[in-house]
Length: 444
Ligand SMILES: O=C1O[C@H](COP(=O)(O)O)[C@@H](O)[C@H](O)[C@H]1O
Image (cartoon, rainbow, N blue to C red; front, side, top):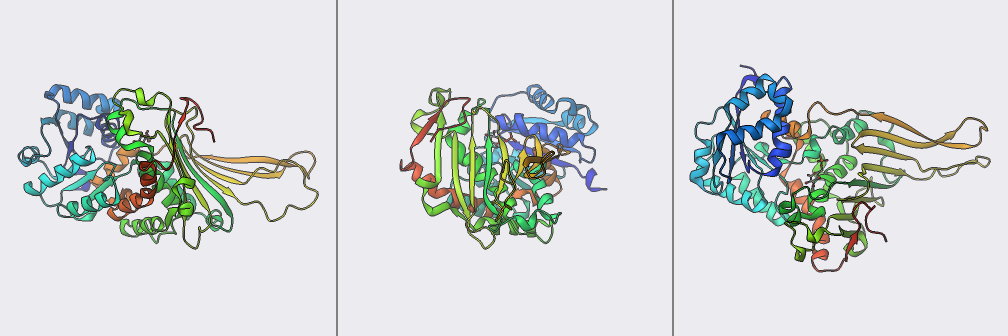
């Protein structure tokens, strides 16, 4: 039997939630249609009173056209929904009874419920080889992440624990590795000798999209910066790994993040928080909570290569322009020969996360007068990856390959980095600014 023929059971805890419908099931559908997918038995567990037909319809809608592919159609035929309280061992036992082949349990749950479900699983006892797949946010602080890590290691070894960061399944994000480590031309320039600053920006036009229940408790800092943007920062700053072996590669990520601190150590000078006008009145929002919908922090990567280079990480919702890119701004040349005239645009490498594109901005002698400088841009399109990010994440899970999942110590590091900012915000040391919907964010 080949690896592709080995049956898998995917149990989704939190199956009636938004994440399952919006991202997880479409990702599964795409993976099942991709050709080399294993047969997957899908079990959905949630608190809603759904019958089998309602669940099947939900899965079929999320699969869309992919549902016609052989593997996806088989999954649709076999899928079942179980109404369950996933914090109760007896309910969990019922879910796992009769599971085929290797089991993956996906926790699409809020952090507090995830902890309770893991505690209940200790009572159940898991079949050998079970994988645990955990959505972000992984804990709510460095210490809660550490205690969740301790709990998880009582259930499964680290290599079977997949902490999901779907940005690590995005082809452009992964292309940072190819760009840096499969070419000679960029890597020698990446460091404090040549780089002035780095911006990692994920500005969205989207607002809450009916996700207030989750988002209002998380806020932009935890939703985007503590997780996704720090992973991008790690990929941009890590040293060349010896290989893409998960242990080696994730050691590199961990080492990069261990060097990260708040720029200047002062959250008042190095962070901005804001929310869009009208947010407090939206359905499901608790105005007393002071949740930010835009966060910005400046970080230092305090190691030999990057010391002195500020990294600005920013993400916001309901903005006028969806700007999603990492921009590496290079220093001015030491001297431009006398006699050159014209525009002097900064040299920049822009890695865009949607549309997936790479652009290099620099100056050359343009047409006409040879001593007049013209700005030019070299662009390359990446094209989409074979699978959407959640499809890529699930492929890693089914293949027992934790390469694209966040290791336990890394999750703790990411909280360690943002905690001084969270503490200063909670203490009211940094004002909560407001910005109009559709604007470019708070004005200075
Ligand atoms: O995880 C999240 O990511 C999305 C942005 O990622 P995308 O792949 O959908 O572009 C963000 O909108 C959401 O708030 C956050 O939870």
